[in-house]
Image (spheres, rainbow, N blue to C red):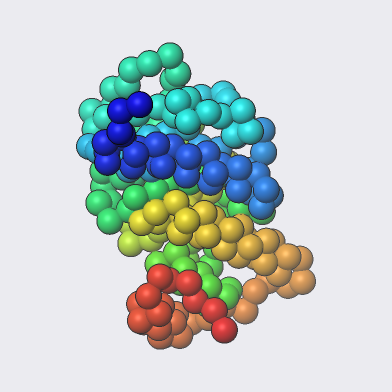
Length: 223
């Protein structure tokens, strides 16, 4: 058999990593069925999960290569949300992966159109003193893409009103970790509202926390 090129080997590894990340979103309770989608930067575009196939059934060849102009070839269509994946990766060259899920508590907060405020210092994991909720737009539209990019300004995660959550990162591992953190923060927010609402950290404290996160390397704060 001929040896694979380094590029081919890298692409094969990326395809396997996307499938693994998808299975992990299900295993961690962040997603189910055919909802949600995942992309990773590749070449001048991205590899993205296809439309309508559950992660458990995905094969590496099912992932769709979408170029920087939004074109793709092959038998599979990319996820209906490919527009905002492409828009985010183009707007944010430091990011390498985008994960979109319909996790329970993040979706509940998004259904209310609420930002997640500074109720816990781990809000800083998403890069600021809140996790914004983008206004509602129909799924799969350019309008939603623009709103998502705006909500992610200076942030690495956001909610989508009446929809779900987006988490990003330099790689799939970081994006997956952040998706879990955002879901936990959303759960804490929902529960705190049931007992009178959270006591929020002020902007000065969040600035101190954000500065600490910058020095802690991979923005994985903790005790």
